[in-house]
Length: 289
Picture 1 (cartoon, rainbow, N blue to C red):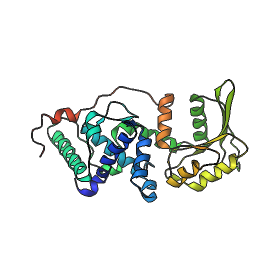
Picture 2 (cartoon, one colour):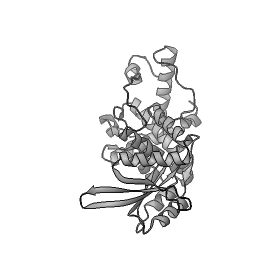
Picture 3 (cartoon, one colour):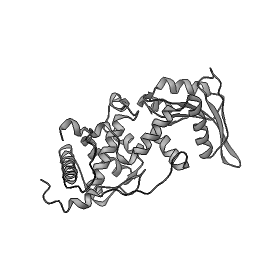
Picture 4 (spheres, rainbow, N blue to C red):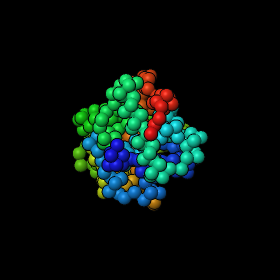
């Protein structure tokens, strides 16, 4: 694999470091945020997106995770949580070692294709596609981007109801400061929060200004705000949402939106599938050099 086609290799070591710092396991977003912060990844890289709307950085970190699973350094049995194996806890990877792992598995997959151990795999650049485990998520996001604006607001309202919100209403009023609806989150018989939400069918990133405008529109009208998007949020937008002393705004990007649909079993059907375990067959392939 040419160097430019293995750009994600530089994140293998940082992913292991992040998971060690997180106690051995973490959600994908936690790992990505840790890597971005501790590697001082520039905003230009964090905000760059693919055609699907997924951030390029997030995509590359996911590919790094996939190679770490194949190498036996991460447990690949649980989707949605990344977990170190015993070997992963002990492994320290610099970029040279990481590229050797990538080259090793590229060769294993190429040999597997030639010997028909597995079906032909995509020849696309891994840095421009999403891992297979997230294929249904990409399809779901593409569908959501094609519904009408009103349809997206209604399906988001349904998602909030399925997630425990009550009295969810889509306002449908123009010139309402970007407020698309409201709901009530009842924490217990004594405590509840009024929440305003905004829905954005985006391919790109929601900006810091848009988060600020939404917060200004919700001040005095709700305890909390939620922005749901099929796209992503710029690093500045995330900083604005978490700004100390300002009313809190929860950000739901495409990744989190997919996980919420999965959790609510809304618009998706669970099924059991099998995939070839390349790591198992690697022991029978002979020399890997």
